[in-house]
Image 1 (cartoon, rainbow, N blue to C red):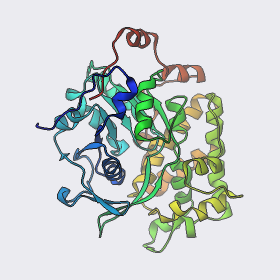
Image 2 (image 1 turned 180 degrees about the vertical axis):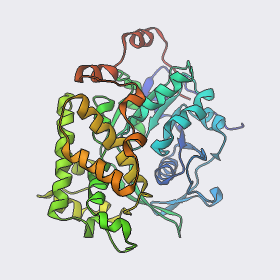
Image 3 (image 1 turned 60 degrees about the vertical axis):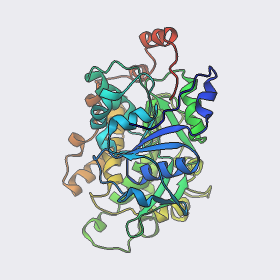
Image 4 (image 1 turned 180 degrees about the horizontal axis):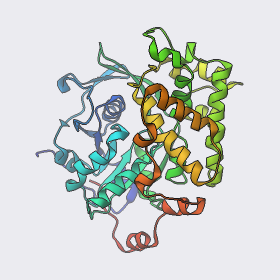
Length: 394
C-alpha cells in the first residue's frame, strides 16, 4: 500500500481533526455511501471508499466518478481490500445495510486498532451494540470507539440511467451516541467537524427510538396494501397514499413510540417537530400537510414491495425492537403490534424471527433502569479510560 498516512503529533485535540486533507474511510457503495464519499471529497477530505461486496454497489466504473450535487467527484482510492481501507484512516464511516453489521465486524476485526473510531451513518438500529458484541465474541482486544446516528446525513435518490446521486436533503439534525455512552468530547468534536449538524443523544436507545422509518415508510406503505399486488408505476405514497385514516395510523405509531421514550427517561418529541428539525418537512399546521408538501418525501421512490429495503429495515430493525422494549417496560403498543402482524401476513415473512429481538443482543426481562445502565459506561471502562493515553487519529 503506497498511500500516505497523515499522522498528527500536536497535543491539541481539535487540531487532530482540523488538519488539511483529513483522511476518512467510507464503507458502503449504496446511495448514502456514494453521497458520503462524494460530499466529503468535494469538501477536502481524503476519502478512501471501500467496496465490501456485501451489497450491490452502485459505482459501476470508478474511473467515471460520482455525479453528485451537480458535479462530478472522484473519490480516490476505491478499494476492495479491507486492510487497505482501514489502514488509510482511523475514522471509519459505515453506510452499509444494517443487515450486514455482524458480517462487517468479522471482515474488519483482524485490522482494527485502538486508533479506530467507527460511526454507523444510518437509521438508528442499535448497530453500535451489535458491532461491539460481535467484536467481543471474536476476542478483539482493540479499544475501538463506536457510535451511530439516528438518520443518514443525506437523503438521496439514485438514477440508474444517468448514475446520478441526486441530493434531496442534507439532514439538519443528526442525533449521535457512542456505545457505551462515554464522556468522549474528542470523538464528538471530531464528528462535528465532519457533520456540523450532529448533536449528542442521551444514549443508544434515543438513537433507536428516533428512527423515522416506522412513521415515514412502514406505516404509510402497510396502510396501502392494495398497491403491493399492483404494478402501478405512477403510484406515489406521499401524493396518492395519504388520507386522514392513514395519517391517524402514523400518529398512533408516533404516540406509542413517545410512550417508550418517556419510560426510558428520554425526550419525547412528536413526529411533526422531528420532521421539521431534521429538514424533511416545513412547520405547517397539520401532519397531513407536512407529509404531502415535503419536497424530500415526494421525491423518494417508495415502492410497495418486500423488495423495498427501507420497508424491511423499518420492520426488522425498528418496529421489532420498539415492541420488545415496550413489552419489557410493560407498555401497550396495539398499533405497532398490528403493523408487525399485518406486515408478517401480507409479506408472508416471519418478521419477529427475522428481526432484531433484544435477546439476540443480550437483553432479557429488563427494567427501565437496567436498560439505561446497560448502555452507559461501565466502571471498568471508565478506569481504563482514565489510565490509557488518548490515541491520535491518523
